[in-house]
Image (cartoon, rainbow, N blue to C red; front, side, top):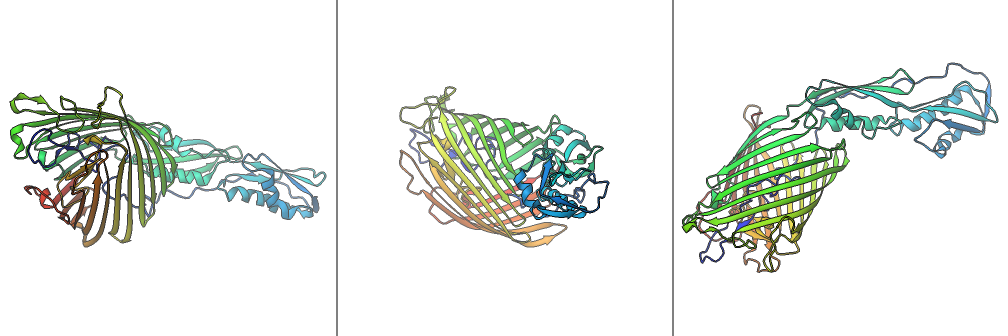
Length: 565
């Protein structure tokens, strides 16, 4: 949860130095991404089965029945339904219409009562029922008493570190009175998707009083602590493309669903740390977070080592995300965040010190950006496909001594970022994946906010940050199919791909080569969910310039991910 996605990387261009330079590393390029941005890996399909068979259908409790059986017939002109808070009298008139204005037997009265009960059951209120109590029928009016089901108590067992209130609040969300069992079951299924919970089983029992119900919930907690490591050559060659990363995460730090994440990554010329703390705010999975990151870069690429180019960067982020729709197959959420990014570049040559090497930096090489961001996220899943959209509006402000310039780009800007991902499973282990990414800027942007193309996660076949512009668009398509399946060695997939990206500037000249096209072939190996390896070979289909010293610049990319626990 950090401020810079690998899809939007920056460029530090040497200013005032008459050397033809390749793209140098943005000081903040290796810091984490803004919370919520779409993952570069395809989203997972919806589970076809529960995590275990313990999630059972909830039983329907017994409701009181009439104890006396009357004989003869009764003239019925109207049913008067009492005790209902869910339906209007007009709703009951519709279902009881076949019994109005007739002489009914007691059995037919029970049929009318059952029709009222069915009205509730069809809407998911299966613990609610109607009763006809002993009465004297006057003026053709039959009184029907509705006993609406209520959830009297939720007893949670099996939890160890997770607070039972966290579980109860999510189970009873929207259930209300009368008790909606369909919604209750959906809440249990939604709870089962919580990463802090391995499985949930539930038993709904009748209470002592008519209409009351008790829910017994047995929870099996998931292991919330994880360690992940990765190795890839996705960084800019100017600071060393070979990157190592270690991430530690505890998903239930103090027992109420709060999460703490620490990540450290480095290359030969860079070191970066990221911290994130997330706190659940409400039972609808609203969450607030605070993030911090810091990084140091040293340019190690010839011929620039003589200049001893250094940079430092850091960011802070405070955000809030609130799901508005949560279903097992559909999610929609909105969120707000405030981000602060700071960077400074310097020259060690002759102890020059702070020096402006990027557009918008001050005389000491400092760039400070404060921004308000509003994002919207939508995900739709099934067992065959996943479709995800993310939109983000960013408004740069001059708060907290942010960079303000007369003509050069600064912290005052407006931009929109849209991302999309569609995955379709055409056969087991065979998927078609399409990704899209676009940024539209209304102003000239500082490098920290520009749109980057080229490299392992955007347009393969080019070095990282081969093109950096104010606005841009990316489209990538990939088809993955298995070539080896083995229980012992895992699954090998081939993944032919094509990447197309273009960029343009606002208020300044657009580079002459502003479109990148790359195509190639990937090889993916997965051994369970703990180990994955990917190799990509991308061929540039548009012209490139500069020497090709590294594997990345030759179109070869690799990534290794290992999660021991």
